[in-house]
Image (cartoon, rainbow, N blue to C red; front, side, top):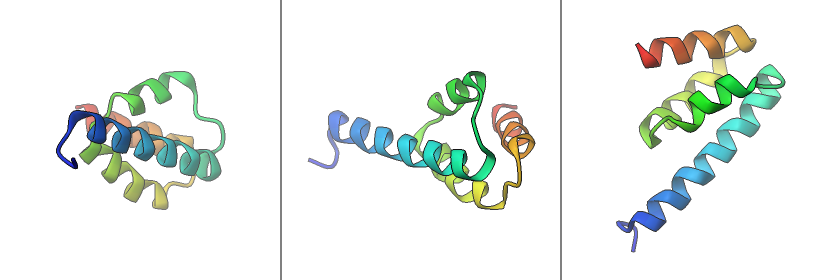
Length: 71
């Protein structure tokens, strides 16, 4: 069951919801352009973002992280 595509999709969606909630608490409102980039991340990248956001102090940190990830 844990290997099914549906299960993985649900886990990905849960991770996305948690990360976006944490980001809102850490940096405030996340602009739609950044939200689209976050939604395009795979599960490993979402895990990395969840860890990295603990050190963010503002939106510029998120933007820098996304730019680094996509390069």
